[in-house]
Length: 402
Image 1 (cartoon, rainbow, N blue to C red):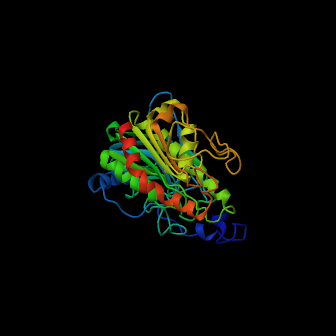
Image 2: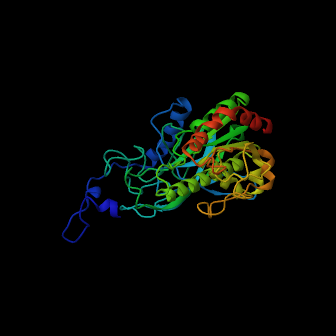
Image 3: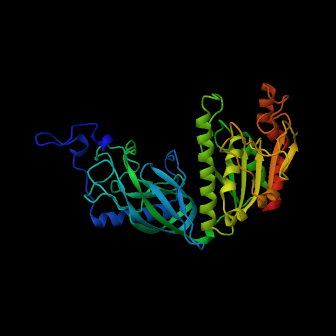
């Protein structure tokens, strides 16, 4: 309860309530709660507009994979505002929620319906700054892409515009630090919403968006496959400018990237069993991509139809996936496994090598370290060569595989 008591003393025999508890919040009746779901459905189905900016820090969703290809089940942690479900929706969608969370306030063990005392999120409740206004405090909410939030509670069926479904916890924006627990949400959406091709792009160190290599590749690939739909992996892409001081941050970034890629693929295959997935990563993004596919099961790997890697720190100079102009140095015969790669190395699964292009050049110190490449000029090669020489061939390579 730390963050909720920071503004006032604890309640004692002769004391007073903390400030957060003093102002009685507006109250919702059961009828008005039901009306919220109806209004949300009308707003989304009639307008489909994009309002506001997305919240940051999407954590990788926890995925339950059933024996058959059933509706995906997503865990929504209470410790963050929004969770990416990995599911694209359009038209009719049904959400069914269960579980309990704990928040540092007066109402413990809250279900997805939120407050049981009538608290309404908004300017009149506690700090006044909430993820979304007008819904029961601490309730399960959702949005599609950057669109307006709508109330989910224990469950709802409604019509939504096309886009990525995100699930959220309607808490005060600065008050997630002492929350715990999670809700489980089953997501059912029409199979017709499934993309034919999903392009998963992973940028390099210090880049934003898709970056200088994967971004141009996506444009070339989309020109060849207009039906493809994009998922840019929202991981930190930590900078290496402070190496080796920030090496721990870099490895944490790689690990989160790997988790987000894995979750996207697993969720997508559950919802859309016939989807064709292509995966592209540059530098740090190539590292995360390689680790991700190494963790996938056979069913999920089968839907990964093509992989393009550039400047891969785990480049194996003896793999049949290799592309470009590279050399064999220091007796390297396997992906780097010593420091600083210890515990973060993985070979490509054998069933994916024929569907993978791993581009490297001899002057790149990241994928092919050697006396000639370990120089400022070598770093320049790493940052410029791939978009100059290999974007077109890589786009064609991926297109031929889908």
